[in-house]
Image (cartoon, rainbow, N blue to C red; front, side, top):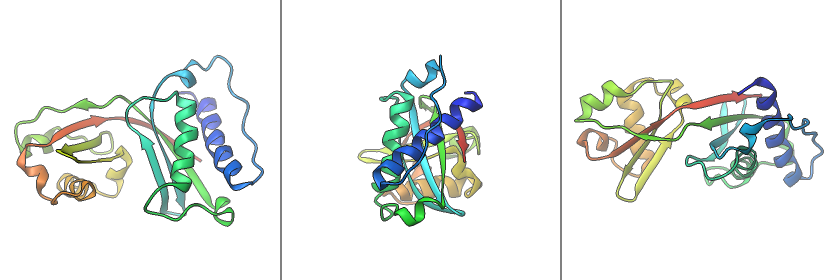
Length: 184
């Protein structure tokens, strides 16, 4: 995705949040002939203040066009992330946006815990773990904070509501995806 489209999507996300807050904010002109904006894509929008997470919500499955996914997830990350209070007008100027445009997840076949560890690629793979009604995902950039594969998987299991060691049982559905990540 070219830089002009990335800048447009970041400005679109910021403008969408600003409108909900009643704050003035310009959006860049939509690039002409940008067919990718009409493609259905999985998208996460992440909000940070300084180095602290302030909201992150998205959709993994490509059910919305790229533009609509950015707008929907910008609003949800700013105002609906259950881990945080909604963004305020006072915080808005400090917020830095990041957008992750995802590939379609693919199921990873693995034999056991060692095989799973061998097949994962830190900083490249986003990971979805699923077992019964438990499910969670980490975007590829989460590896920056959890570089150890066992720690990464254990933390992801806990996020899903399972025991940290559940990934060792080899009865989880594991899917991976990649992301094109860009931010302000």
